[in-house]
Image (cartoon, rainbow over all chains, first blue to last red; front, side, top):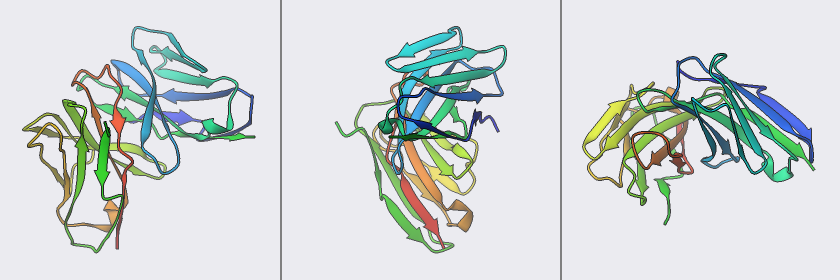
Length: 110
Length: 114
């Protein structure tokens, strides 16, 4: 399987704290993307980082990419209850298909 | 602009029955794909299409067929349903084959095979 893996599988934090999720993958990539999934809904794209980039920001989100370690991290700063969701990393391979990790379930306690 | 629309939202089938999951997008996207989501497994790619008339297999294609007669529609057919196909199915699309754009997902079809 070309799937990546997120770590931790589940994370519970207090509102206002920062949340960090990690993703490891197996093959060389064109880009890496992070998606959010609210319960019972489809996935929503959050941020894309290219293989030649090391860090990217979007609002309260910060993504890093280390291609030598085949890993990425997603940081959500000043978390809110509305951030409660599952978060998935996805890697785009040479065949232009997107392969997803197993996800991190984030719970933000008000 | 509805995005990606999947129907039905829920379905219960008996083993051996066939059915078609519908997917339509109104964004004129070239690339469309089907995933299944199982607990602890993340999303796995079933089939994908890079344009009308062109389809190909993903990671887990066995037991499923697809066709792409128009840019807008990408139905997924279960030929003879098996309990192992109980899952949540997601259709996704993106503007072009290259993959530098985000994928847009439908809200899924929850399928139970008895």
